[in-house]
Amino acid sequence: MAQLSKIYLDREELQILGRYCVRIDRTIVVEPSRQLTEDTFQRIMVSKPTISKISIQNEDVVPLIEYEGPYTFERVYGVLVFKPAGS
Image (cartoon, rainbow, N blue to C red; front, side, top):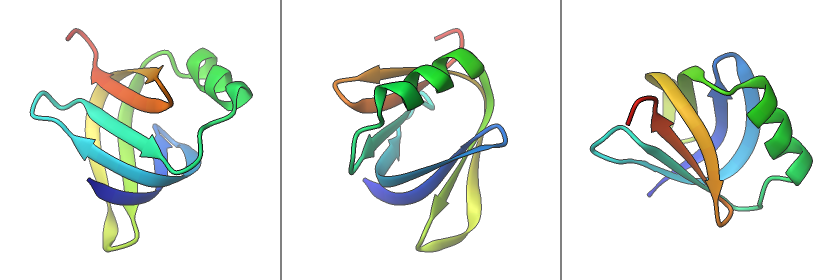
């Protein structure tokens, strides 16, 4: 899994240190070093039911890594899962 320092959901920045991977079906799995608070998770769920673009900042790679959506979002045992909408 690659390291990440920030993730952008559309234009909203989240400071998340952790690891991530992108599956062959374009599902993005983020394993934060520290779990998101319940308030942060609920705020994202309410404000971003569908995400049109996810950008990941990796300390080792200078440009942002971008994935075009739409994506839906869920949390599974503390891991953040962004699935392509319709899959």
